[in-house]
Length: 90
Image (cartoon, rainbow, N blue to C red):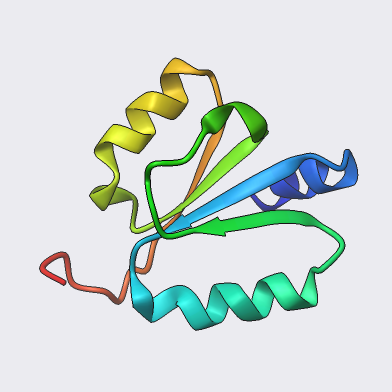
């Protein structure tokens, strides 16, 4: 997954991170500041336009069934970040 995202960045592609869990917001904001030249976009709303991105990165993928289906329909690659320490009930 890291090599795949790296190849998109090297080709100056656009990546959107979808995060609806406030726990991860600070981490993603810090990452965006450190990688200011990369074309990262961070959204907390699943209501965005897919057509402009080469990759979708999901945080808490189990909460985004409809987003996964839409990205698949538009043939946009999906990378998902999974926190193995987070209980499913949260």
